[in-house]
Each structure stands twice: as structure tokens, then as C-alpha cells.
Length: 490
Image (spheres, rainbow, N blue to C red):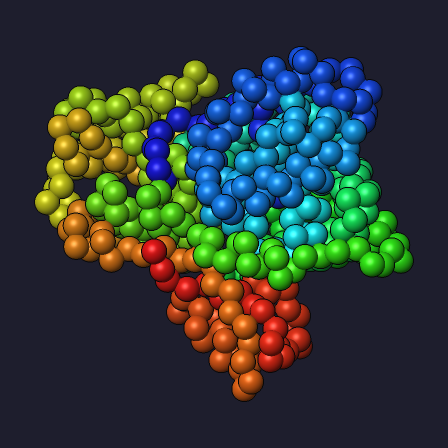
């Protein structure tokens, strides 16, 4: 949550989710595999700054340079252009994702890079994304992109389960988390398999082990399942499985496409050496999630989600998700009047689809912070929901607010969260230390359990270690082997 806004993030010209779901960019009738056109380069150049800003910013330094070199090497296999014509960016976001847009712009997040275990896997992921561009999949999706903005899980849940298919579904979209990792406008299953096949083709052409596409897909499926389990969600249906082939069949398909090709390089040791020290999880500059607690050392505040809820941090908002309600923490322009602020937030939530106003606004103080809140009840198709805005003044020109939705009469489920918001001291802020990947060599006597105990987590250490290192539930480690740990460190 480096930059907060109460508005739902909308892209009209760009953004693509691939391994985790892909949005689209209007394209043209250019033949698949043809070189990048001037029009496509212009589209990409216009969208690139917005995308980078919304995905946590572009990283610089040796790790970013390494990713760029691998990306250019694999992209050159596509026929879209020479290696120097591609712009490959490493994004500072704790999300497993990668995407590409017309014009030769390719992106991968540091979190997904940290999940990989060799250079061939990195090349495979980037090759998959370039495959979408080479096949002009975005052009095929132009009509859908024009009808849809990027929406979040909260918007979908409310529109489909609580609010039905009426126009009131827009309400859920408006208060939904603007975190770009929650976007769900996807390419078709067929297009995903086509991009996998092209990525495998590029891998082989560049001399990499073509089976790397299957191994990285397997790791991503395992990470998705672990994340769902840690959040108490259904791990049998990953977020991207609704439009993507199911993980098992997709891995098997990738293995079949790779065939019996052997001898390709993986560059495992080079890869692990180059990513050693890469940030893992939340960047403290954007706030961090620790269990049900969110701490922002820059804005110097913290709050705790109710029992049974989990938090997802985004570049513009923190989403709060649970079975009995959904919400987000965000901010907006503030002129020193909390009443006006709360009413403006309700208006923005309702947008042009729904007139939304609280029955009344109550004033209070929460842990020394001036606060104001109100609730509006909305009915649609026989369903009633309560929308609550709870705002806090941190300075004469700065306020933060929760916007939540629950079933009618159940808004109190968030009361403990509203009352938990408080300032933290500079000393407390200084104690927020990021997690990083540390590559270590397995010593004689080391086991999965002993190595996992060094992971900077209080739960699921073994499970996290296995997924991070691409190990199955029965795999062991051997002396001399390099493995990744997640530790605390600046």
C-alpha cells in the first residue's frame, strides 16, 4: 500500500495477467508472429508507466539487470524483434505474476522470480508472456476489454453471490481492492495453452531445458494451494483455474509439449547466485501484512483484521477478506472535515450506478484519533447489504478509511478492526524488517525440517520451504545442494 486511493483501478489501454490471469490490450489485425509494429510500440509505450506505477514500481540493480538479460534472450526467439527491442522489467510487488503487452514490454514480479529455482524457469515464464503477444491474443480479447475494467475478487464475490447480476454489482467493484494482483479478466484456456506451447518453443530455441515450463507451473500451483490453505480458502480451485486449464493437466500438457528433449541448460547455480538477497513478501515501504495485522512503517499506523479474516496488501489499498464480509483500507483527498470525507467516500462507492449515503454520521475517537463513521443499507433483488465507511483523521490534510460490505445487520463483525486502528511510534516502525531470500548450501546433517526452522515465519515453515524450493512432500535434501530460505534482513 505505497500509494492509496479509494477508487477502483481501471485500465483502458493495458495490463495483462498471464500465469495468474491475463487482462488485455487492444491490438490490431497483425498476423501472429509478425514483428512488432509502430502502432504496437506506441500502445506499449503509453501503457508502460501506468503499469509500472500500479505494480509497485520497477526495480533496478544487478537482479533487475539479470532478469532483463534473460528476458531479452528468450523474447528474441519470438520473431517479434531483436533482443534490444524489448523492455523487460522486474516489478516490486509481493505477488506471483508476470505479463507482457504489445510493443515489446515484458514484466515479472520479484515474488515470482523468488519462487523459481533456475534460469530456465525464468525464461519459460517470460517466454509464455511473449507468446501471448506474438499470438496477438490481446487483439482477440479487445471486445471484452472494452466492456470490462479490471475488477477485484471482492467485486466478483459481491456481484455474484450477494448482489446478484444487477447494476448494484458495480457497488462491490467500487469498494473492491484496487490491488492489481486481484485482477481476473483472463485470456481463454486455449490461449493459455497456446502461450505455454510458444514459451516451450522459445525455451528450446534458446538452448534451455524445455521441461522448465512444466516445473515452474507446478511450483506456481503448489504456491497457490499453500496460500489458499494458509488463508483458509478452498485450495482445490486456484484463482486462475476458472479460465485457465487446471494445474495438473496444464503441467502434463507442458511436459508433453517439451517431449523427450534433453540436454538443455537450466543454469540453476547461476540463477540462485543472482537472486540471492532478493526481497520476499511485502516491502515495508508499502506496508506489511503479519498474519491478521497490517503495519505501515511510513504512515506509522497499524490495525488488526477480525478473527477468520485475511489481508492482502496492494499498491493502492489493503483488502480484508472473510466469509462474513469484505472490505478495504484506503485514503482520499482530505480537507479537515471528516463528515464531508465520509459522505464523499459513499458517493464514490456508489458512483453513477447507485446513490449511496449513510443514514447518519457518528463522531468518535479511536486510540486518540478523531474518527467518523456511517452505514448505508442497500437492497437489490431481495438481498440487503450494509455498506460502512469508517474514517480516521491522521493530520489536517490526511485521512484513512475502511469501506466494508456485510449482509444486512452484520456490520458489527468489523467492530474490532475499526477499534484496532492506531498510530505506532517511530521506534516501532523501525522494527519492521523485510524478508529476503537467502541461498545456502546444505551441510552434512541438515534436513528439510532443520533448514525450514530457519525460515522467518511462525507457521507452516516446512510447507513454505518445500514450495519455495520445488520439493515434493517426500523429497529430501543432500549435502552440497543449494536451497533457498526466507530470512529477515535489510
